[in-house]
Image (cartoon, rainbow, N blue to C red):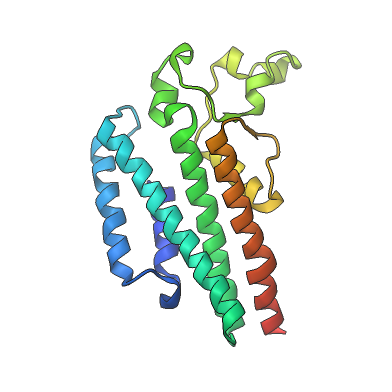
Length: 213
């Protein structure tokens, strides 16, 4: 919930010219999707219904789509108009980049192995195929202190922080590091995120710095 609210907040404080329509419309839609999710699981994620699954995935999709559109508008403004305010441009680029990290981390967290509820409430033998291969999934034959934390030994399952780390490394290295995408959808999402992060870094930030100088 906190990660989602941060992503929503970062989008809401973007300059108006980077937003899709009035500022409050998308905010109202996102909160409308978020409130039922909190009502279904007010404390811990232990229950999942078809409705909650659809709402959670829709919420992530709305945030991701709006942020990518904002990135497109930002890039369009840079290449088609003369921008004078480099400081606000740098701030907007950082907001878009940070929102990109959070929302893709949430997307990986929501989709991998059936989602967060499925990963913790369903026996491993009944889980859907994994979208990501974490290092803990193959450390059972390592030295004892490493093997003790592996998936096989400790029944380890990835948390939101693990997926946010995957998102951070993918947005900074523009490629997977210690966690490999396995499914087609995971590879597509990581590719989209990498391209968006690369465009932000190479085009938006470089342009803003040149304006400042």
